[in-house]
Length: 68
Image (tube, rainbow, N blue to C red; front, top):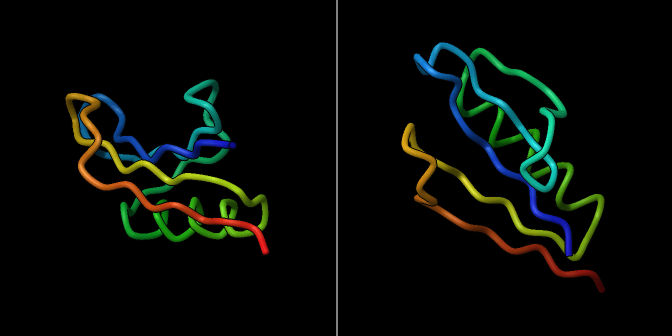
């Protein structure tokens, strides 16, 4: 199962979407855009999980996407 994470940069001026918490797949200026992109990636690559993290890298929300 793939895990996509949405995490802020050091000063929360940008948001990263990462696959398996490795190098960023994409960088976004707005948190909601980053979440939307991560959700789209997860839906296209089910089964997947989207984890939304805070500045301390704690998971504040998790969404699961299952295949058919």
